[in-house]
Image 1 (cartoon, rainbow, N blue to C red):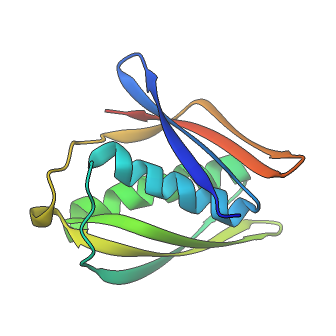
Image 2: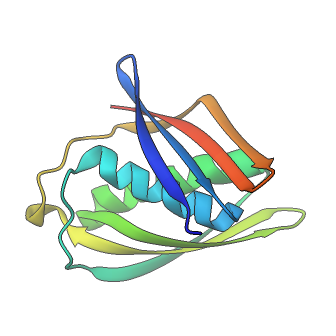
Image 3: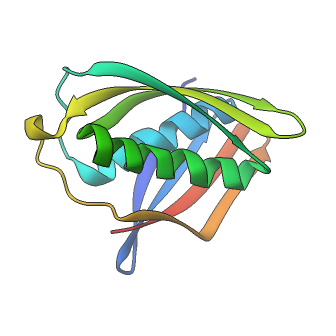
Length: 137
């Protein structure tokens, strides 16, 4: 079973809930949810790019990951989609990611300003993992 996400209204912000069999898949689904919060229809074009992150906790890693996707959008002028993640939990949490960068000129994108720690949760459940994050729009 692949991970899934759903967008949830949250006062002036947008929440993304995700569930999946692995923590990797849930992070990827949240990245795809971030893209869906910005754009209703995603074209098939775009070049893949990669990046890595290290953080002191799962929550910090999730925040840094989604923040990096927003940074990549702003610097590369692309909407990161089809997110693939590998997480290595050790003394420090390491994430290796790749995304397909759809040129912003090819989409009608809404702005997401930032990811927040507000109401953030990541938890292991009976069938895998669940997570929730709020975006400032």
